[in-house]
Length: 123
Image (tube, rainbow, N blue to C red; front, side, top):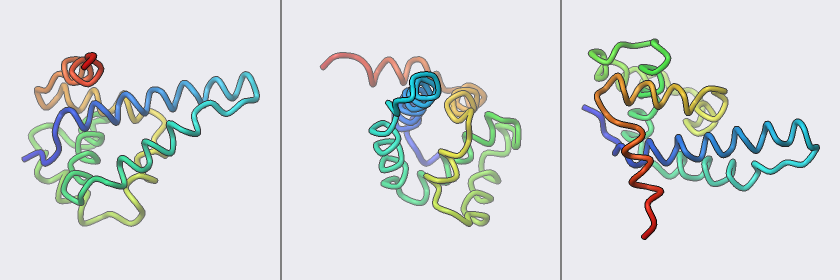
């Protein structure tokens, strides 16, 4: 069973996309726009509990076809057992993190767009 909310996954997707766009802009302009977003994303992932972090990794793995959606439990257990570096470093080292998380959510029957819309709706 997934132990992280769709809203938290969507938050990571949104921030990962912002970070990626800042990194790409830096490559072209010589300015590093993504540093604040990188720090926020890093701290957000680091602040998740172990179960949430393992679930986030599992969703990413499902999105990149390392595991199938029917293997969610195994993916979560593998993420817990094979963790060798901080989860935030591992995930932020994945260049297609946002894409894989979206694909993983969809494979698990969740709507990434709906969760993202909920987070971006004005209060």
